[in-house]
View (cartoon, rainbow, N blue to C red):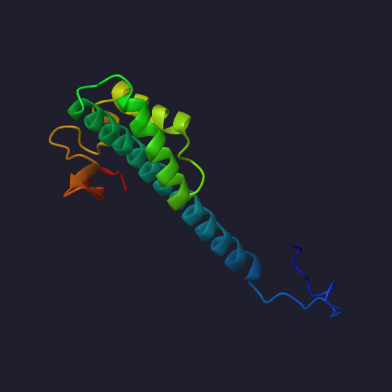
Amino acid sequence: MTKKTPAAAGAAPAALPAGYAGIHGGIVEVLDAARRATARSVNALMTASYWEIGRRIVEAEQQGKRRAGYGEQLIERLSADLTAQFGRGFSRPNLQQMRSFFLTWPIRQTVSSCRFPIGCSPEVKQDGGSLATSTSAIPG
């Protein structure tokens, strides 16, 4: 999609008001910063969600005492159901990677994610089965 400029729309370019460049530049900075912050927040939440999915898969497998084939059956069924409900991103290999992610990184809280490492609360908590975030540990 192309943006129409006044010249492209058939009108002569209007003179810019005094101070326009400063106002425009400031607004662009605000929007760029907001978009970067949004992307970081979404990435953090998706990472936490994938870790949590991996944890739930591992716990379900352990309740099944890791019977032969149980883990694969679970992942196959989850893949089919989650893909039907949410679309791409829940293939069998992706769910296996989420499981591996949890097994590789079993500790949720790291010192680097705390503003004050001593007494820092977890950034992501489980609350009755739902994922909730705590911004107290996110640097401002």
